[in-house]
Length: 220
Image (cartoon, rainbow, N blue to C red; front, side, top):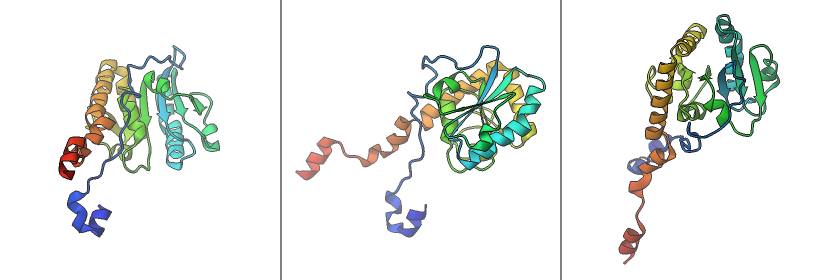
């Protein structure tokens, strides 16, 4: 938008292509072993854990949401998965919380999560962590700030929450209704395939590209 305002003569020739996700790499069809103990109910957050909005998100979730959930489901465990965890994140490790640090592959954590959370209180644009979880057909509960940049429908492709009470309520509802959670995950993947896979994203530039035959014909 800024470029179009600064160069209005080019506005008709400019099109922005946003973030995408490799939907083949992040696929629920991937045969990956679960990293979780069988008796646990794993809730997963992924991201670079030296990034302040991620640090704030997991600290808030661990202090304000997780205790509400574990009061009724002590087998529930919060997994913070991501490289370079700050000291404030490492300090969360203990009862009910695992901080993994760097992992060789994030997909097993997504694939076998009961659900994925994105409780960022400060978020801008499209959050790839949400797209990756959706591509893996996982039910996602995201903050309103985190969900705002994604072209998807709350209540169908994912759940959104505004505060600790609604976050806990949305998670509890999905855990009580596994069929609805599974259906939401499948709808989320279909959304990613249609709107956020690189195939879908890059198809928008096809009309700007000439085929080799067209190029040779023009040159002749």
